[in-house]
Amino acid sequence: MNLHKPQPDRDEARQALDMLTRWAATAGDAEIAALDPALARLLAPGHNGPALSRDYPDGFTADAAYKATLPDLQNGPASLIRGARQPIQHVGISNFRLPLKFHTRDNGDLTLETSVTGTVSLEAEKKGINMSRIMRSFYAHAARAFSFDVIDAALDDYKRHLESFDARIQMRFSFPVKMTSLRSGLDGYQYYDIALELVERADVRKKIMHLDYVYSSTCPCSLELSEHARNARGQMATPHAQRSVARISVELVPGRGCLWFEDLIELCRAIATTSPQRPSGNRTKDRRGSG
Image (tube, rainbow, N blue to C red; front, side, top):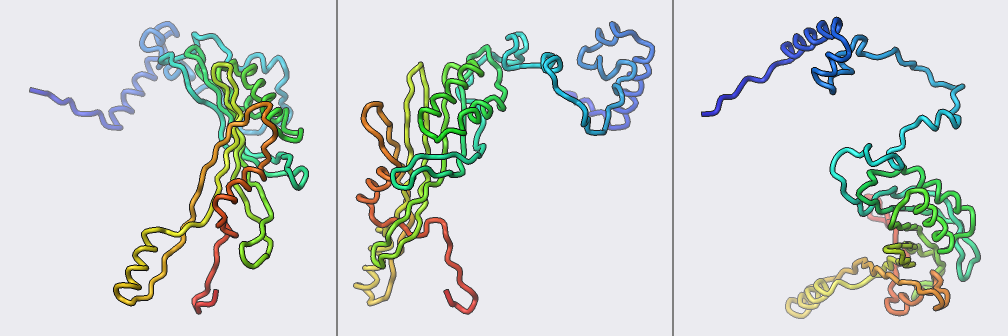
């Protein structure tokens, strides 16, 4: 037989808190800590703490002496870790953006908005990282025209500042290329999503270029159904085209020459020539049907 005790309501909780507060007003710190260390701060005399300023401290400066007093869970002793000691495979910061310069094969250097993701792996005796150090490591090298050499330098900073055994950086950007249409001969810009990634595992670094190549393809199901409608019922039918994405990842091996962004795009265009002319644009039509 199970007996269920009724849960105290808000009034009963308030009465209990008042009783504890009255007791704490005459009890010593040792008595309060002995009752329950977690409640020591709540029940101690003046438990609401000192009055806190509500004004922004314009004259405050975080000098070296003040910084030395700040807690540092990342680089502090293992005794600060609460909970299970488990290694962390990936921890870091995702999608912080900044303008970066990139070398191109055909148009010199381009400055493009770039999304950066940086992660590290931590041993079981490390509980976390200071995320700002990942950004500072990257900004220290971002002023240079970008290449994998600069990512190498940023990754070295990651490992040194964060004391990590594995690390990775990925940068994503939209790369513009002027293309000529298949039939009209008109030119227009196509944008290709490219990512550069540097991965280090067990002191082995790999440099990888990723390309999301978008192309148009005919849906084979709708094509067969349309042909069946035409042949079997004499019914007009139209197969639809669909937007497809081929995700290409290429590992760049030292000493094998330079692979430009344009080179990889042209290799894809040689295989799938139906690259849509407007990958991110939308056609609009008003209610009268004019497009």
